[in-house]
Length: 310
Image (cartoon, rainbow, N blue to C red):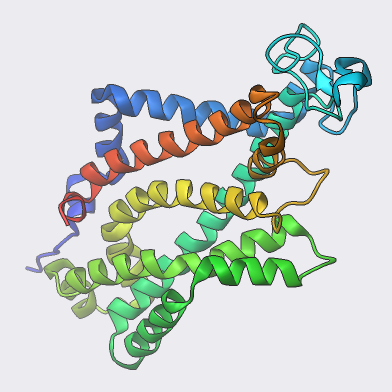
């Protein structure tokens, strides 16, 4: 009689998402963070609808909302907040801040989430391959991780973004940010794979004639899914901050396409005369990064308790 040894995930039926859902229901801070994340994701996805609801496009000038005799300062209190402009207007141009913020969320979160997806897919694939196959494959991929991590990434990002001219800036930023982000998660996945590949259920699958692809997809990948999910939510805020930093430094998304980092950079000149112009995009960036960070910390505590203690 042959005994079939199943993986713990298959045997218990309790995947990482079930544990995560239980933790989300228990912690108030996680619920609030998740609500903020969902709010900004919905805002980014519904940017065209919200812009139409507000009545202004992000590039539309409203000269009646600014005072030409005061250097283009917004008319009215709090940066020109009114029934026509819910969050006020930009100084000098009179562009609607609400429309700029929601479209900026779309651009900033699109770049950050797409770059995160590239990092997670590339890092997970490299980490599993290095940990499972070992030998020369592990040596080559590990040296590639070391080489990539040795570069001063921000300086190289600035240099690459400055040299490239007539290209799609959103696509280029996504590729550049993703290029330097994958080794961190690859190292985590490699370590997890090394501890999993000699487990009984993996040996049983190997003896039973399963090929490497089947073992990696059916036995190894579910075992590393928990840490990958946890670290993914911790990567996102870093990606958002990186996009904002590049746009703030003037090498990211170019006007008139809005992004939070670009808006913050432009608002610095007006922070003493129109603080709302600085406060609105800065608050959106702060809340998004904080929410993703708190959510990621909670998921790491649940899905990768050993990693949270290191």
